[in-house]
Each structure stands twice: as structure tokens, then as C-alpha cells.
Length: 552
Image (tube, rainbow, N blue to C red):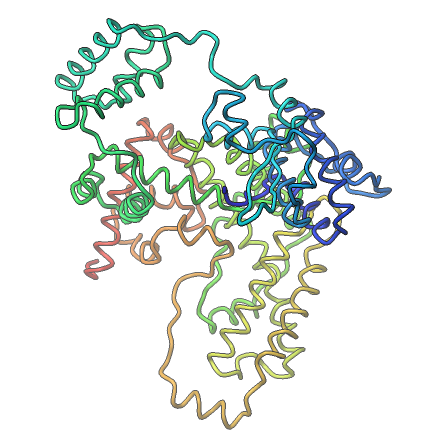
């Protein structure tokens, strides 16, 4: 049973949250209406929020922000939306219309694999989650299957043909020669021969795999299967620390290409499990949206908006921080939500089994930029955060014990970050309004859970407790845990060579520099993106070696 997918489309994600507590009878009707969208939505059209709400609920909102979404985004999240409603309604087999099919029946009907069905669910094929006896399962109604089939025509290619025995022999002989002379993998051989024999590369690859499985030790390639989850995680962590792919490959029993592929699959897996909701606008669909929204001075200057983790430095910054001006706040928030929207679109286009390095890197770079913009918006609310803490505590926050002070600052910081994620710059308000309410609630909740200690106890606790040093900066988003470089890297940039330091600043958006993709850096440096990636790993390895040795 596949896990419940995240709803990437922001309008559907918001609507799913609102309908979660709807009575079961109403939810069943809304599931039927939502499933009808699979036949109505055109991937190339835009659909306003009011239309979607009306199509699903039958209710037409009278006042709503002018927000729309693309048909491609809707189709990519429609099945996840319906499945979440099914979870809320606890749909049973008797709730399904006659003729509904499970995954295996649909695979037989279309002569496709389960992986093809999973891919189709992200392209508009709507599934329902059913509470079957002993387990949950995915079911597909006849209407849903026919609507998707009319649009996508699933099934084997009509041009496909069976290979003759003579052609199979020639393919095996060619593959053996390619592997012996050039060291090619089974995939490279299949791609090379697909055009020559008039069939798909996948058909040749599967034929060669069956041939090798029958020969055993005398196989042409003798390759292992795809990397498992543990190997992907090991490869990802190792390359992130700057280790060479060939060194990691020797430990895993694989070549360098397989190690890089395993790390790429892990990065794509991490991205797919993010929820990137947020407000949108028709402006985001304009061809010049990137140039218009991201080239503004407030946006480009937000790269250095870091926030210290240490409590003392945090309070000092909060005491000096000034609120962002209205136009600066709006520019930052619009750019932030545009980048989240663009990353969301990139995730929709990301293939499960064949993500490209350029696709993954573009999404990761946009998310790094989002975090820098978010830090700039949060810095503008630090004065409000400090004022709320003083008002609710009745004392200066610095008078709290260190443990309580860190807990309070963490709770208030998370409240501001959540407010930034929900803030809609197109609605005309200021960020201070939702931030103030969220801070007040967070402060009250923290005080109820953490009774203040008496001053005498505070002094005694501080006298007994060893001093604590929390270096580095605060992260505003969960993905920074694996997208940011090692926390030791920024501290040694000044000791690296000028070229290596500039590269790391450009790639990770450090020191006030706007983060760049490998393609952008390669264009400026006159080299290939793959060479930029290797350079980046060498620079990271050098920085970590300096940090460990203390050599300057």
C-alpha cells in the first residue's frame, strides 16, 4: 500500500485541511465531485480558487483573493487530494460504485506495471483509499480510469514488436563487445542499440537482464541491482562531505557512476517528501516572472540575513532589529512564494526513477534562496518577538535560566517562521498581524508548560551549570538540515583559496551572496556543470579538513 502522498498544489492542500472535519456523508459526495475533475481539468489552463471550491463542495465563495493554479498542478495533486478525503471519511468497499478495480486489475486492463499506475496517479489518475478487511488498498472507479485513458492512452506502444531469436543473438553479441571494449553499462548498451533494432531501450535492457539471469556467472554484465535505501543514504552523506565517488564506491562494491546515481536518488527522495504549500498568483505564470520578482534590490540583498543560534547573540540582534518597510516586506514575501511555487512545479516534473542532476539542483537552489528570504522576513519580526516575551514574562528574557531561555526563544522563533509561511502578500496586510497573534499564543503555551523559576533558584542554577556555546545560525526551514553545508564550512571560508571560497558562497548563498545553480556557475566560469560539481566537492572536503585540523 503506497504511503499517503503530500498534496503539492496549494489550493487543494488548503481545501483538504478545511474539509478534514466535514461529516462523512458530505465527504463522500465531495469525493465524487472531486473525482469528476479528472475529466474536466486541462493541463494547459488556469483555474481560479473559487471555481475549484465550487466544483468540490458546491459552495461558491462570495469574497476571495484572486488566486489561481494551473491545470498541470491540479492533475498532479488530484489523486492525493481525493485519497486524503477518503482517509478522513474512512471509505469502505461498500461505498464504491460497481465495477471499481484494485491496482492489479487495472494493471491487467491496461497491460502496464504497478510503477506505471503510480506514475499515472501523479498525472491525473484518481485513486480512492479503502478500508478493506485487514488492510487499506487503492481502488479505481471505472469513471476515473476511463477519464485518464481518454487523456493519456495508457498501455503498451502500438509500434512495439517482438524480437526474433536472430536479433536477440545479435544484441547479446553487440552488448558483450561494447562492455568488453568500452566498459559500458547495460543501460548504455541498450540506448545505443535501441535505434538500430527498432525498439525501445527498455525492451533491450530487460532482454539483456533476462539473458544474464539465465547465464549466472557467465553473464555479460554481472551488475548488481539498483542501490537500496541504505546505499543511497551512505552515498548521499559521503558526497555531501566532499568524499570522492570512487572511494565510496570501493566501500559499497560499486563504481563511481552508481554512487553518484545513488546520492541523486536520495536527494530526489528527500525533495519529494517536502510539503511546499503557500499562496500563489497569476503573475507567477508570466514568462518574465523570474526577472521581475527576483531581481529587486531587497530580494538580492537578502542573502546575508542570518540569525544567530546562541541565545545572547539572538537577544542582542532582536534588540537592534528594525521592522522591514512595507514595500521591502512585500518584495521579499512575493519572491519567497514564487520560489516555493517554482520548486513545487519542479517536483511535479521530477521522474521517480530518472531524476536528472540539473532538475534536482535547480529545486535545491530555489529552496536555499527561500530560506535566505525567510530569514530576512523573520529578522524584521524579531523586535516584535522580544516585545512579546517581555510583556508576557514581566521580566527581561535574559533573566531566565539558560535552559528556559533557549526553550522560549525556540518556541517564539518557530511561531514567526510558521507565520511567514502562511503570510499572503497579495491580500494587502502586514506580516506583523499574524506574527503578533502567533507569538502571543506561543508565549502563553510555553508559560503554561514551563512555570517560571524563582530568582534565587535561577542564580543558583546559573552558578552550577557549565557555560553553553551554541554557535552557527538558526535554520528557518527543515530542509536546511541537509541542503546547507556542514556548520563548520562558513567559519573557514576566509582561510580557503579565493576561488574555492567564492564557489562555496555562490553555491550555498553564504556571506550575502545569492545562491546559484551548477548550470549558472558553469556558464560564468566557462565549464560544464559536472566539473562545477566536482570542484564543489573538493572545496567542501578542503574546508572540512581545515576545520578538523585547525590549520589557517
